[in-house]
Amino acid sequence: MPPLVVDLDGTLLRSDLLLETGVAYVRNHPFQLLKPFSWLAKGKASLKEGLANATNIDVSVLPYDPQVIELIEMERLKGRRVVLATASHYTLAQRIAEHLALFDEVWASDDKRNLSAHRKRDLLVEHYGEQGFDYVGNSHDDIPVWAAARQAYVVNPDSGVERLARAQGNVEQVIHSNSSGIKDWLKALRLHQWMKNALIFVPLLAGHQISNPVLLWQGILAFLLFGLCASSVYVLNDLLDLTDDRHHHSKRNRPFASGRLSITSGLVAFPVLLMAAFLSAAWLLPWAFTAVLLGYYILTLAYSLSLKRMMAVDVIALAMLYTTRIIAGTAALSLPLTFWILSFSMFIFLSLALVKRYAELREARKSGLTEKTRGRGYYPDDLEMISSLGASSGYLSVMVLALYIHDQASNELYSNPQVIWLACPLLLLWVTRIWMLTHRGRMNEDPVVFAIRDRFSLMVGTLFGLVFWVAV
Image 1 (tube, rainbow, N blue to C red):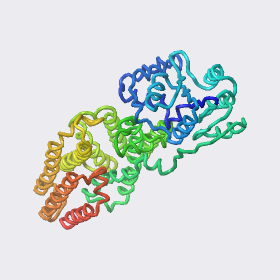
Image 2 (cartoon, helix red, strand yellow):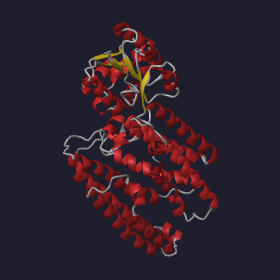
Image 3 (tube, one colour):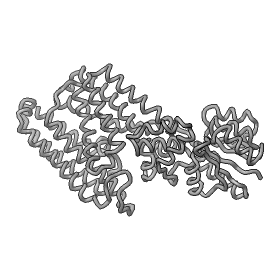
Image 4 (cartoon, rainbow, N blue to C red):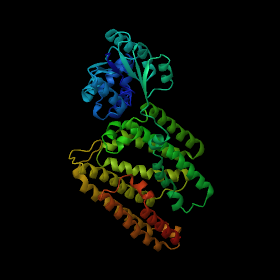
């Protein structure tokens, strides 16, 4: 029986190891981005070797295709030899073969030869003869290999590949096991996270300008453009965090981590979204909004590449990212940015950022982990300190609100500023409840998104707004 030869990228693996090592390199070596170009100048094989040696891909969590694995196992039960033949670098292919323990032989690229298309065909024909093997592949590079194979197995084919493969007349099976759709893109773009951009309207409410149609329209535009920029950031962040996400109990199901969306599509989507956001902002809104948007993007990029792994710095950066949305609102609407809004938002959002970290660490402790959590600067034993800091920060935001009542600005904006005192116990109640729910393990999402969806939080928010309306 002829051997079954299996391709790796896009076939056995719902990803591409060249791109996997590429994004891993960017994450781990953000200040050495020119080095891969020097490798590429020597050829694609040299680039693959350089990236493979400069990164440490965890092959145990890569998104393998279960139907291809099932096919291999069935053929092995028949006593058939199974060969892994891939254009990926040999060190990665060998590690994958050892991890899966499904292959009798491995052929892959090295520093001299990029084993793809006709090079792979020639090697397989040399060792197994013309029509002396069956081949499992997925891409246009596999067309010449199928032409030399006895039987062709086509897996999740690229556009037009299935038609070309069938034209050769030796297709034994076509496997469609990984189809992506609009739901995957909606999840990748995190449209539900756009709700956080409602913070852009805070200056409009605080300045009593919500009935101004011109400012309201500008606020809506700012909301949408900030959302496009944020979605671009989410896509880039998911690409940079592939390995960490695959080790997480729920994040491993994200579209890019699971392989439902390709890394290539993400590398196209994030700059397109980013350009749409900035070009539209520069055209439609004040330049100050574009400047704030740029600051938000730079801070987010720094957070994704480095800050998120630094203790304390990460939560302060998160609080600043929340606050930046409010600053963006003042810039888009040309409204003043007050000391009180800034100080209140920094304390309340620091508390919510610590809520996120507490929830992650609680899950890690529940799983029996004691070492530093992956991709973060915290240990599960930090749980009690984080809850102390987070609750304190939340209560400090209540104190800022209380001090605001006695400020001259409140007397100018409100005819009955003393009524605002009623907002203080409401905020105390909400902060306390958020932390109690987090302590009980019921905070499984972004706390701001949770608040927008939570009935109790919406009720408290309505009463909070009513207090300020009565104070007017």
